[in-house]
Length: 326
Image (cartoon, rainbow, N blue to C red):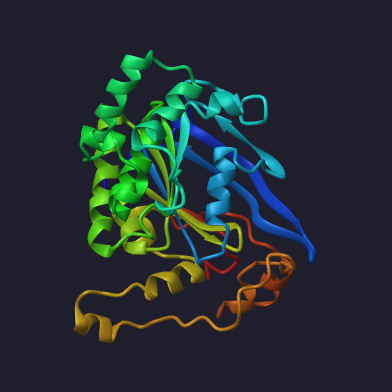
């Protein structure tokens, strides 16, 4: 996919995440779900975010939406409303940033009609009069591949793929610039997943949208993303253009993830060398002193166990590893 970051110029920043962490107090101590993330998202791009289940991807997406306030750090939005995201600006921010949830079954109110679900955001933000809102609902339903007749039905009357289309229409209703896609296809049949991915891609081109696309399927992320960030234990360990990440994978965790992706050709799949990780993922409550991946990394040395590597430019893209150059 063509890269849309336009050389990552500052003028193209849409969302700026500055040293953001999210901690939760639990009975055992402090759980570090997101740990010091420092990243920019650029206008018109899709930033893919991948990692194992439980690594903090969805929590990070909710922090970007303001659903969870960051424990440390700040988020700055550079779009129509140039502002730092906090309690005072959250309502304004919700006008330009929306989320598509993972589960199309639990994310739609079963007591509301489809039309009411899509219209709700427009009512909250006092957009249009009644007649215009009704027209807008019909437009959005047709935009996502449904019919205007569906407006008077309830969510239980639709399949999973259709419900996700309704969720997409709801996110688009207030004309946002930025959308967090929180694993929007993981709950869908494989036969439907490509339809939703293609719909999201077409909508991005048509409406000039910017996406954070969270997923664990690396093939899907490669197809839709301009850049990809790899998360491990709440940390970004590698960040690169999509092609660069796949062709020149630098972090040992990213390499292990990619080695697990099946190849459609049986002969090539049989010849592929898999990198099997040993050990368990450390607890986010008792995070290791040095590199979070040191306990499972075949390259780890004493410096890895003592010093956390910064995310910095090495061999053409960003990586957090002491031993890349070696």
